[in-house]
Structures are given as C-alpha cells and as structure tokens.
Length: 112
Image (cartoon, rainbow, N blue to C red; front, top):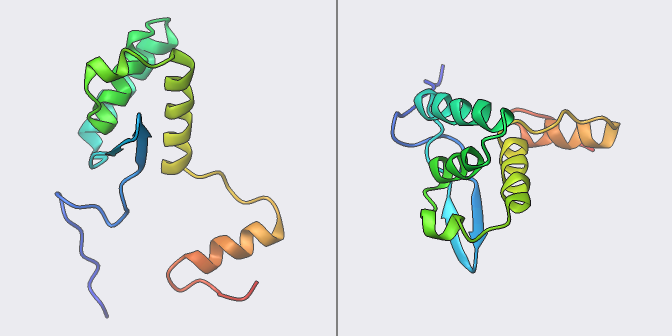
C-alpha cells in the first residue's frame, strides 16, 4: 500500500492566488493555528469591526497593510467569500457537476 505523506511546511493543495494592482499574492499554509486566528477576526467582523475584515486578508495572503487600506471594503468582503469558496467548494448539484467532481478526484471516474 502506498504511504500517504503530509508536510507541516507544504500543503498537498496549491495556494489560492489573488492579484491586487497587478501583484500576485499566494495564500499561506492554512494551518489550524492560522485558521483559528482568522476565525477570531471573523467573529469581530460579524460584530461590526470592519478592520477585522482587512486583518483576515492580511493573515491569509500577507498583503501589506498600506495596500489593503486602499481597497474598497466591499472588495475585501468579495475576496473573503472567494477564498472560503476555494477552501470549501460548494457541493455539486447537477449530474454533470457531480461527474466533473468525481473525475477530478484521485481514483474518480473520468467518464462524463
């Protein structure tokens, strides 16, 4: 049986990439510690702390504060929604989407 190997410094999954003013930023390794810190700021944002939205992006992607501060808060919200959709993609609803999802999994069927 082939051994399943993980690393604490490199994910099996590619980083999520975003571009701001033609500069690309890649998501950091989404460890439990980082995710917990992001969730703390998410809770603050739900209570109305809009700065916490910017902090989440900074933690995820390492975007400098001076760059983030120039962005529209609605764009920050959209970016966070995009990121969460990449981390937890929605379940497929149509048969075609289900077939495509199975084909993309290791060992999944490649027929559509």
